[in-house]
Length: 234
Length: 156
Image 1 (cartoon, each protein chain N blue to C red):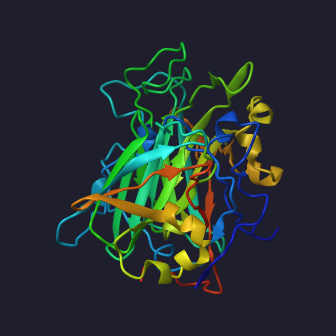
Image 2 (image 1 turned 120 degrees about the horizontal axis):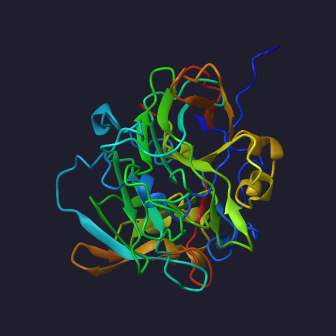
């Protein structure tokens, strides 16, 4: 079983000078190519019992609904061969509608919403599908450079079939004027790969009189020459 | 129109607020019986400053055990694990655009130098992968992201 290696230009380089925080936090010595063994080709699984009924709905985790435009974020998690990645944990976190995180480090002068925690989690179903209900996060300033603003985004964390398929990324919103200015978004060398992180408005996900819908599919690493079997969970 | 070939989703940093979404205490815990060992240390950047907004994820394939810990204000972390020859460790955080992947081996483990992955590492860099024994069932291991004492990271 051989796990595909990602093409160059896909993932951001560890050293991305435009993203200042990376300067002292990237290794300077060459990485050592790791042959994949059981340790990399296995990984944790998380059961449905670890997910509470409102974990996927960030608008129903407090006594009142949060302020903001309600949205549905829906998609499929699959591997490079298009096979669904089922029963895998997805964790998300985001700022509130005003662009403020519920976190002691966030000192942005925007209101905290007492009805919004900003964290969600779910497991994909048998077809690799997932759905979150949340509010559209606000953009917020950061100190990377003069007049720097992060585009609105939702952080995503996924495990996939094994530890080596682990992915942490961010979902953006189409039409955001901050995207071309953002050093984190632009850290992805391939412009086409960047665009995969931009969720598009989807009328078929939009629920009448309730919420806008956005589609965000995620593709994790796949395996060479094993199109119909999952090698990770032996 | 043909069916589009799925293309990989790129990484983005977990950022400084990862503790909102990356909850600790998620399983699966080890099912092995026995006494755990503690690996304590710090996550440090290229000038030796503590990385106080990072997360370490530790996987032990032999036990099917997963552990996620956050670093504190001094960059300190602590893993409590059942003994295995090594731990697979993924580091995430602000300033880390993808993830840094390393291993923690134990100083008093047998056949350290014949470990197939250790053999890929230049001899002079191997000590950065070895947790030093500091007491009964207690080890020290710093993850150094850059610089003189830079930990060996792997392309996985």
